[in-house]
Image (cartoon, rainbow, N blue to C red):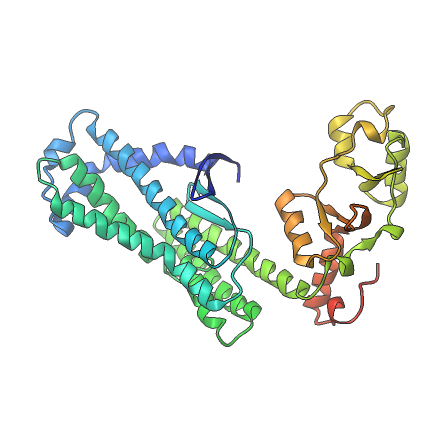
Length: 385
């Protein structure tokens, strides 16, 4: 999703998704339009003692709606921080936390290997939400009835945080409850088997939630259901890849440098395009006398020289290279491909010279072998290219 970084907390980058900026005013409007009804609900459930008439005049409902909407997203941010800080305690790197229209998303660089760690990390977010709910309720009890606006916002956030915790603990993998389920299943199963079961439960939950959303004309439920279904499928694929690449090094899955087609900075663009057609490649390492100089792809030519084909590779090649070591785990190459959004990564030796190249095709070959139950190259011999 498109997002912009707005700062950091505890060294973790905090981002706002574009959809957050769209949904925030809508949420503020919906809350403001129901201030009276919500205040009566808070009086009944929490004994807040809110003077409803004091909240419904002039611009007050919309200001309260904006304050409650912002408070809700701050609560979501703290929920995700709960996950993130516990995960970091276990040595996991946190890439970012992003707020978007469905809530928050903490992006981990890797998943925990120990089921106990995953269980604690999954529970940490809802635990923070429950704590926020209790703190909001305590504040409602402590505040005088002469502060109806504060009573409304804090009471609203108290209820919403408890509801957020309860909803997240439903078994809709990869929601928190689904991750708890996977952690418990992983006690006596492989991570892949546990993920498949948890994902199947999550998909079933998503289908039911989606049907309920359609019957209730609730678009928000339908969107959440769609997200859960897609995310469950995506994480299953991710874990399958990790299982397929376990024990493999980059050197065992790469195409060696001796077998690569390469170009030089002086290669004319017309010749490069001709070679792409004949050799069925869309990317080439660029080698100069002193070693690796860059990489050039069809996208580079299309973006930097869309009309002019009289230049050379040096005019369009990329020199900001995504590289991995040949001794690194194959999963590092996979992570680099996904993180950078590229189709290939260069493999280098300790001296920085080109050792080979790993493409998505190379990694998909390993994955297909694993899916069909074949022996994995990392346990016997290098992959044939």
